[in-house]
Length: 305
Ligand code: 13P
Ligand code: SF4
Image 1 (cartoon, rainbow, N blue to C red):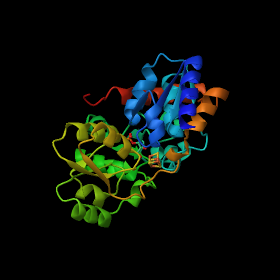
Image 2 (image 1 turned 180 degrees about the vertical axis):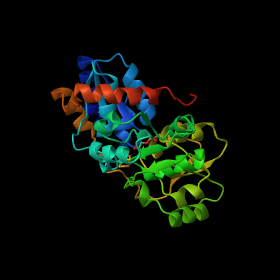
Image 3 (image 1 turned 90 degrees about the vertical axis):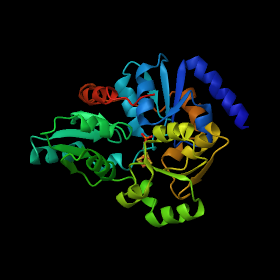
C-alpha cells in the first residue's frame, strides 16, 4: 500500500515537474520521499534555487509562504492547508506596527516563523541557524525589535549582548521540554551530549551542551565523536539522526515534544496535492515584494556547509 503511494508520488512528480521539500520534523515516511530535507534556512535556499516548476512543501504555512516569496514564478503547494505554526500566528502586522511606533529608531528583525505580512514590515528576517550572526552584525548603536519568539530572542540577546525588545511569542511544542526532564535524561544517559533548539526555555537552554537549529543538530551529530545524544527538540528529527548515524544513539528528552501541525502531512495528502495541484500558496504582490527584502537579507547570512 505505502509502496503504491510512493510510486504514485514519483510518477506525479515527474508529470508535474515538481520537487518535494520537507522539514526535519516531518513524519519519517515524508522525510524519506523528499528530494531535500532540512531546516528553515536550508529549505529557503533550496526553494530559491530549484529549477522545478512546482514545489510541494511538506512543512507548515510560513515555510511554504517563504518559498512562494522567494520563487514567485513557481507553484508552491502545501498538502494540508491547516498546517500552520501557532508561534507564527502569535504576532500580526498591526501589532508589529504598534511596537514600531513605540520604538521608532529600532531595527526590526523577524524570525522566519512569522506571517508574510509581518516579514513585509520587518527590516531583516532570520532563522534559528543564523539569528546570532545576523543580529550580531547589525549597527551596535541600534536597538532591535525581535518578533515573535521570546526564547530565540533571549538566546540571541545572551549571545550578542544586544539591546533587544522581545515579543511574548513561543512555540507550544518546545515549551513542553522541561528542566526536570533534562535532569532525568542526563541521569539515564550519562556521557551523552545534550543538544537543544533555541526555541526552548531559558533553563533548558542553560542546561544544554549545544544550542542548535535542526540543520545544525544533524551536522553536529555527523561530525561529533560522541556516541550518544540527548535531543531537545521536536522528535521527528530523530528519524534522520538515526538514519545518518546508525552507529550512534539518540534519545528524546521527551516523547511529548511533537508538533501536531507538522504531522498533518501524510503520503496520501502529498499524492492528492500533486494530483489536484492543491493547496496553492500565494502572497499578494506588494506584501511579497516588501517581505522579499527581509528574506534576501536572511539569505546573505548562511552558515558554513
Ligand atoms: P529550524 O529552522 O531549526 O528547522 O526550526 C524550525 C522550527 O519550526 C522549529 O520549531
Ligand atoms: Fe511552529 Fe513550534 Fe511547530 Fe516549529 S515546532 S512549526 S515553531 S509550532
